[in-house]
Length: 140
Ligand code: GDP
Image (cartoon, rainbow, N blue to C red; front, side, top):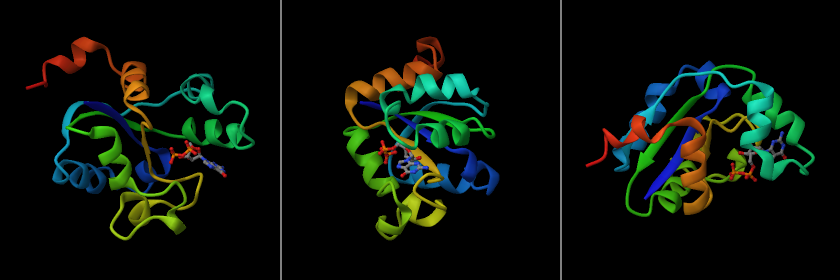
């Protein structure tokens, strides 16, 4: 199973790409694709379209387009659920000890990492950032 992780602009600004990637691989995820890039406000709006009616949509899409991000396509058994366990609750104040958000997130909005919330969304979100040709070379 695949899932999409994104190291968000706050974590890139804190210079913890390596620390976060190390926790991901230590938890048994295989990296199929990874890139450092920026997305426009319009691309952020497209990626988070399901949240377009939420009150924080403007803040979220401003934030995600405010600096470089690192999308990472991951593969593991039970990847979606296991990755959400590894990152912890949306709000770092409520995230369990040792989770990536507990360690590196600043606030409920600037929360260091994204993780897909279902197997179907994992496929769609991986496809938003990576072509299939970029991924299959790293599959076992
Ligand atoms: P996730 O699945 O844990 O990422 O959480 P959600 O799907 O509920 O929200 C998506 C993203 O929107 C979160 O990861 C946050 O970056 C952002 N977000 C959620 N709630 C808030 C909020 O109350 N304020 C702001 N500014 N951003 C939020």
